[in-house]
Image (cartoon, rainbow, N blue to C red; front, side, top):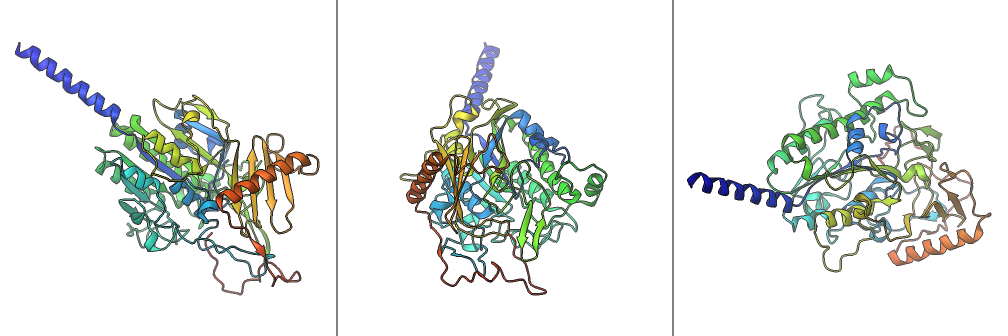
Length: 478
């Protein structure tokens, strides 16, 4: 009888444990890479960059082929990732503190230079479900008053108002990240901080927002890894061994985190999101002409800071064992501000009352049980950028993308299925479609309260957009 009672008790404890595990909200890791182009990974076609851990993540989850950043630069995308709102609605439409030309045809709007404390973030919502929350890495959404710990994160490790690290090797000179041993690499350090957070919070649900500084400038890598890529043959526009080493440091981060999750038996109940804040840095325009960047986004046109696909087409991989089919792909266009409603639905966390989100939950796509309700996605960038962008707004509906440029109000229309490089402007040939998409775009701009640039009465057509920099002038990180 004693043995029977003990057996029944053990069975009850085991069942209760399984029930508790099943009811436990999933852990979340969101890894946001800075300036990673959509072809910068092996699983997206690169034969030069080596990314075995990220490729395995794609094999274990869903790879999106038509994923987009909310903006062609970083801060607006980061704000969208936090709130589920479009940059147009937030009025956070450029990197902070932005680039205002000396002689633009248009006056840049008086846009918001921080993520307001009134905005409800994903971290704040998840804390209502008992989540431990950490922001580890780049923040770039305002000064100290607006740092992560004032937006629902329990800790802020490495996040400041800055957009790029002074160095990838310790000493880092990042005020919110104590320096490590000399020559410790920043990607490794941020990963180790995330590992510590997982170990310290393994008994409760956690949300780790890990926005790596990589692969943003300054382009740096470990010497031994650089040497490996110096011995490799280039693959189309992928040929920079230092950039390749920086890409590999991010891949190492994915491998380290997934190994820790497996070691602690947390992998099966963890959502892992891997994505980028904008397209890869393919080049910049300056008074001295065009300068090639460290990577190439072909067949997409141009890159970061551009109105075209290279500026906003990004990688997106989502792994969630038992929910997302391994090795699956999705060709539906999705955008950064979809992540908030997706993760709230995944964790059964309700929106705050009257909270507005512009995104749509990707759960029907991730579980392959349906598709999205919306017809289109949108962008709004009323600014100038050295990556070549002049003020514009854009819409993608189905295979069609329309861009409206504000300097002269001309429009361009491309069929992305037939013309991935956006070389064949069909606006004049398909004027009815162009006008219909423009009307939808303008209706969305009105609905979101988007700020529209105005004519610059001081514009001098005989002078350049930007005055040449004086010798010794400092460049801003974008």
